Amino acid sequence: MSNSSSITHFLLLAFADTRELQLLHFWLSLAIYLAALLGNGLIVTAIACDHRLHTPMYFFLLNLSLLDLGSISATLPKSMANSLWDTRGISYMGCAAQAFLFLFLISAEFYLLTVVAYDRYVAICKPLHYGTLLGSRACAHMAAAAWAGGFLSALLHTASTFSLPLCHGNALAQFFCEIPQILKLSCSGTYLREVGLIVVSASSFFGCFVFMVLSYVQIFRAVLRLPSEQGRHKAFSTCLPHLAVVSLFISTGTFAHLKPPSISSPSLDLVVAVLYSVVPPAVNPLIYSMRNQEVKDAVWKLITGYLLKAINCFKISSNE
Image 1 (cartoon, helix red, strand yellow):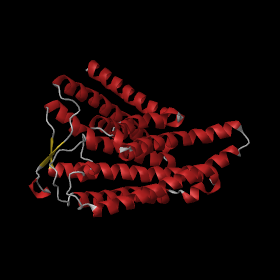
Image 2 (tube, one colour):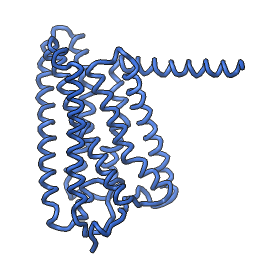
Image 3 (cartoon, one colour):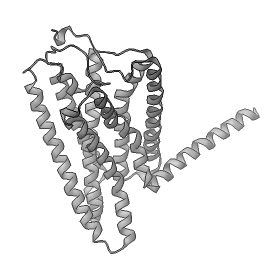
Image 4 (cartoon, one colour):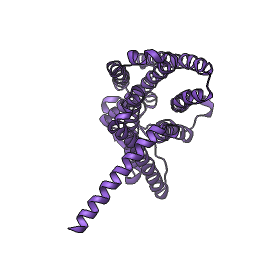
C-alpha cells in the first residue's frame, strides 16, 4: 500500500517488450510527430503571413493548429524517449504537467470547435451580420474564452486528481499520464470530488455538442434553400472540414472513455488512446486543406517562397 506522498514517479505502459519493436515504435512515432509539426506549422505560418487569410475562419483555424501542435507535443515525445531508451518512468511532477497540458489543450480545442460552428452558422445563416457579430475583437474574445475554459478545466481536474491518496501502486495502463488512469490508482471512496468535476465537465461538453448539432441543423436548412447548386457546393465545402474534424475528435474520444468494460484490454486501450490523442493532430492539417483552395494556395506560396530564397542563397554562396 502506498500513497501519493511516497510516489516519486509513475510507470507508463510500453508499446512493445522487444527492443526491435521499441525502435520501430520510435521511428513510426517520430514520422507521425514530424508530419504533425510540419502540417500544423505550415498552416500556422501560411495564415499568419498571408493577409488574404486574415479572416475569422482562418483565425480560428490558426488557433486549432496551435492546439494540435501542443496536444501531440504533450504526449508523444515522452513516449518516443521511453521507447528509444527502453524505460517506462515519468516523474510525479512530470506526470502532473503532462496530464494538465493534454487536458488543457484538448478541452480548449473542443471549445474552439464549438466557436467555429458558430462562425459557420453566422457566415451561412446571417451573412449580412457577419462583420458585426464576428469582428476582430469578438473573435479574439471567443478564442481567449476557449483557451481560458480549457485552462480552468485542466487546472481543476489536475489539482483534484493529484491531491488524492494513491493506494494501488504507480503503474499506469496508458502510454501517457491520463487522468482516468490515475484515478484507478486512487484509494476506494476518495475520488467523489473528482467524479463531481467530471460530471460538470461532461455537462459542459454535452452542451457544446448540442450547440454544434443545432448550429448545423440551421446551416443545412439554409444551404438547402440556396437556389444555385454552385452556392450550395461552396457553402458545404466550408463546413465539411470542420465536420470531419469534429467527428474524428468526438468519435475517438467517446469510444476511448465510454467503451464497454467487457471489451476493454491494455492493448485495445493503447490503440484507442493513439487514435484520439495522436492521429487527429497529425491528420487535421490534411482535413483543413483538402477542400480549401485558399489554404492550399497559401501553403504552396509559402513553400515556393522559401525554396526560391534557398536557391538564391545557394547561388550567392557559390558565386562567392
